[in-house]
Length: 218
Image (cartoon, rainbow, N blue to C red; front, side):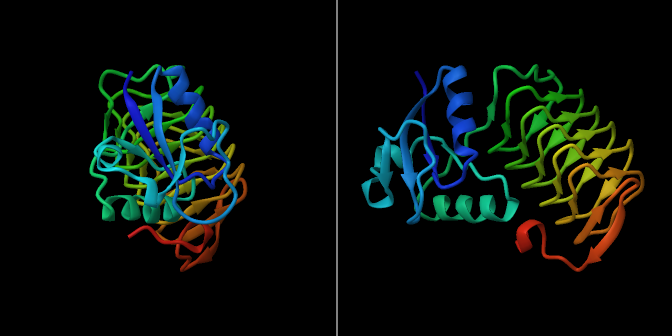
């Protein structure tokens, strides 16, 4: 059975990572409490503090279970700074991943998602429950897609883009880096970088934002 390290246990989404690992027949070697605060693990038996990490654990692949792109980037940098070098890509077994999918390290695809053919997903992309991604998608690093969102064919998303729960992005739209599409919005045209868009059809309501939760992916 392959062993994985979960790095960071304070986000509620960590329980979905645990379930995906279990469905995939993978085991958690250690779950690292990297900062003080609430522990959200279902199974706390592998819980350790950073001081408890061994060289053998650091040599294992790791997951960073955080939905917010900025948080995910911070945790990934922290993990690599202490020696982790292999980010694990986890596609839930309920997801029929296309043969033509190309993706970077650290991808997480939650249960019930669909991904179209010939898509290219960058490092540390996060597709949450039931999201649908069309063919020829082009996603940058640390993109996060919320539950039930629909991203149509040939959509391009820059680094750090967040598509909120239940939002829809129509075909051939490009959304610039660190922009945020609010829950339930329908995006019908290109969106510049560092913008918040809301509504049906989606309109820019704020410019110059750092990114989701005011955190920029760099």
